[in-house]
Length: 225
Image (cartoon, rainbow, N blue to C red; front, side, top):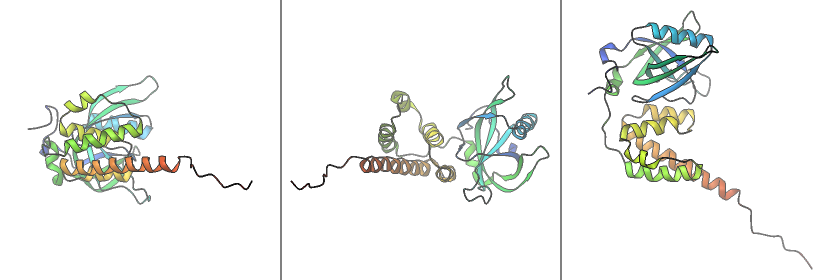
């Protein structure tokens, strides 16, 4: 079972795709990532991707130490495209499959083109129905939203199927780049859920600890009379 009628088959995945390095931005298979494109090199990248048969762009993250890019990224198909009056492209990428990037070079327009291999992630092209710790996830998610002051439509969350729920939370929660990369590289939905739960728990504990440190002390200095 594929994710949708317009999603590629494994044999249709290209060996070379444009790469868009963006720290902290996470695209997962089955997810949707909106992007606002305005730099000339990336406007050219989108135009070239639209002109190709696959319409794919690979999202990768730069390494924090400046040593290059992570080897594993996720390819997304341009599923929505519009132009703005001020010269921007507004697009959405539909996550197709993760890849390993073995090499990359600069295109004449200034953007990266990666030589990529999807073979390790062929399972990404079909929905992941691995059982997850849903009750545990929802419990810690409520705590996380409470301490962050986020509002949520809990009836909608309760109705959301497992993979979409975990994918959406992994993509939108404000985790750091290394945490986002760890979520991307999780072997399957169950592992990603466990990691997501651990990250949410750490965020809740960190917020509570910071709040306690900032509470005024009741201790008062003794005064001689």
